[in-house]
Length: 508
Ligand code: SF4
Picture 1 (cartoon, helix red, strand yellow):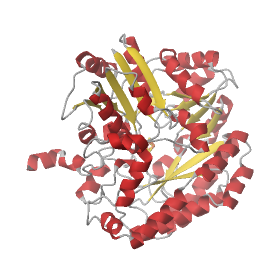
Picture 2 (cartoon, rainbow, N blue to C red; picture 1 turned 135 degrees about the vertical axis):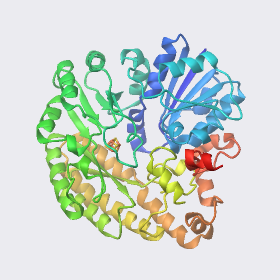
Picture 3 (tube, protein in one colour; picture 1 turned 90 degrees about the vertical axis):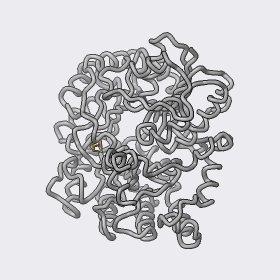
Picture 4 (cartoon, protein in one colour; picture 1 turned 180 degrees about the vertical axis):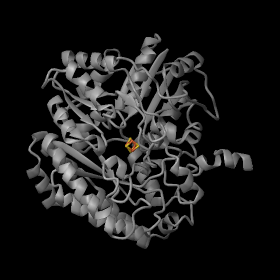
């Protein structure tokens, strides 16, 4: 069969410099694995990573018997529109990836198959049956994450196509483990058992990479890199001669002790993205179990400054608006942290509830705190779909804007530039801050919350009628695909997880 696999890195056309330089490096790893499995099963595979610069509608003319799409929730409407167009041309469509796992009931309205955990058997069974399931698609999941994945060599042609699109830095996605032993309540991986994949294959893949693309960066897609630190680093040290490859990983602060950092530095780790999340919660992953508030700021600042002595790029991740936050203090503490650690790039997510991603979402839905923002706005930066526990919207967005302005002000960007010694880090940190439209967006939102009654009522949960402001943004973002959106796609049931929970089903 002709199988098309589309990885949606972004939801619509892009024009900015950062997207041009980096989007191809954000390709997901599972669409490449699925592509390799389809080839192993004897099918003719066309793989495309959509970075905002390709002609999506032109691809339709190439034809396909089955189309696999994958993307985060912010790309869901794009995926729904593409599925609609392919189905009209007779193809069967499949959705995998984070959106499929978070909102399977909604996705099943627009796809023939919706995937949870996906392994080779799941793909094989779909390709064997390959039948339309309409109006409700089949929701299919393996019992757990796969224990083995295709080799880098078998997915190399897909990786190489993406490397060709990356003009500066070139990142190859790799993975050595799934799940996480930590239990951060908001995280999709908190309920997935930690499971290392084979270290022998990891070494073979790294040797293949040293031979075929020396000098590239390995982007480790492990939810929490280095849980079995010695095993991982020993495998890398055995397979990669010093200076041949560089690495990027997300890792908990708790794993980043000084001896571990020395080894990471020697192995060529250039970027680490630890999650701080909050000054009042999640202390176990920051090695700051006992410390809270200001004491935690000082402890984490010292730790991150120490990391920066070994790793040139450090991005610290924060979640704003968590239930543990109250008043101005959390925002002021984050500003203090930014001043104490000028070399780290701060990234802010707003507390967002992604369907059934995490068990805490059930509690938020029971409490009636989840708002029905269309999927396009659910990317943790554009809209917060959880009504904050301890802030009014106006207060929250005012403090949020003030913090973001502080972090990306000219003087902070300059201090970061001076503190970063690595050229690429300097370049990326400056472009990222300059490309951000977050302050502008949040100011616009605050203004509308004061003046537009439809926005006020929507945010207060008094109305579910989508304000025109959001509808117009969807039309602009999707471009020509807006006309292909299936009926009803813009809206979704934000309480679908609760309604399908065993208690709710039993009560019916
Ligand atoms: S440490 Fe990271 S990956 Fe693990 S549960 Fe927490 S947020 Fe998720």
